[in-house]
Image (tube, rainbow, N blue to C red; front, side):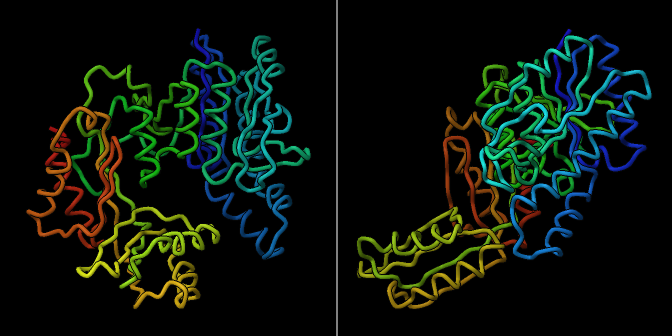
Amino acid sequence: MARIVMKFGGTSVADMTRIKAVAERVKREVDAGNEVAVVVSAMSGETNKLVAYAREAAPMHDAREYDAVVASGEQVTAGLTALALQAIGVNARSWLGWQIPLRTDGVHGKARILGIDTDDLIKRMKDGQFPVVAGFQGLGPDNRITTLGRGGSDTSAVALAAALNADRCDIFTDVDGVYTTDPRIVTKARKLDKITYEEMLEMASLGAKVLQTRSVELAMNHGVRVQVLSSFVDAPGTLVVDEGEIVEQQVVSGIAYSKDEAKITLVKVADRPGIAAGIFGPLADAAINVDMIVQNVSEDGKSTDLTFTVTKADLDRTVQVLESRKAELAYKAITPDPNVVKISVIGVGMRSHAGVAQTMFKTLADRGINIQVISTSEIKISVLINEEYTELALRALHTAYGLDAA
């Protein structure tokens, strides 16, 4: 007998037909003799609708009331899923975040999980009851409902799996696993049987929307084996596991891309101590996250061009912050460019193999694609290129690293 947490995303519970299909899938695990806890998201599109209501009621809304509104989507789904399970003979009961309780900090709208009291939940499970838990929500220090931010149901599920010491956490979504790259762009993309936590974390943070980043961090920290699989296809998914479980590691496991990038260049900034702090300090104060940074010093050594990236959503605000400090920073011009994309090759095998960067640079050069910015980590190389070359770059790199399906 295994203890399994099964999490179903919004598309998996989009209507009553799909909720009943979810109930049948859960019943199969129950009939196999497994202990099962279910975590559900709100129905597809429901959270967006609730967010719109909150903003219409009060554009500058109280974050605590916002959480009370948007958390209701998961409450509805949990109740309906429990009813669907009861209708086919499964002793199910819905649980809200505050009923467990799943304790969080008090940062409404993007709370972090502090702990889960599973004593009552485990007792009920041992008595033969199967919990259906509303994801995305918890209980803050003031005993008010909190929410975990977009994609928070993944985090709820992994945290619950860790607290229950589950054998596995199955994340059911609208894709049947993790692919070497986006199969909508690269038709030769392959589904991976296994991927390491570190690789999945890089892919999630770099644009692959299969799993929420915080859920992968949590799984890695607590050693929770996660499986990503489809609600709509009966097929094995992709296991996200510790590096030790993967016997033969690929040098490159996947290629991710992010179109949510914008480049900013400050032309002829004075090359003196403290100038970087003068630029990036105010951006940090404005809660603007800076990603890739490159600096080119002029021949005379007195000035420098500084290029960095932010999200597209932060581009206008970044320009405003920098323009407001032009006199202090003494730069000649500011050049924003939203028409860029970040392409990243990822693989734990990079630690022990040379030539990965050279393959990337040569492949792009052979196709006339100019690299604007480069950044690296131990298992990742990212480059910034013009957005119009996204598909060409992905296909070429996928082939160059031997990732194409046979």
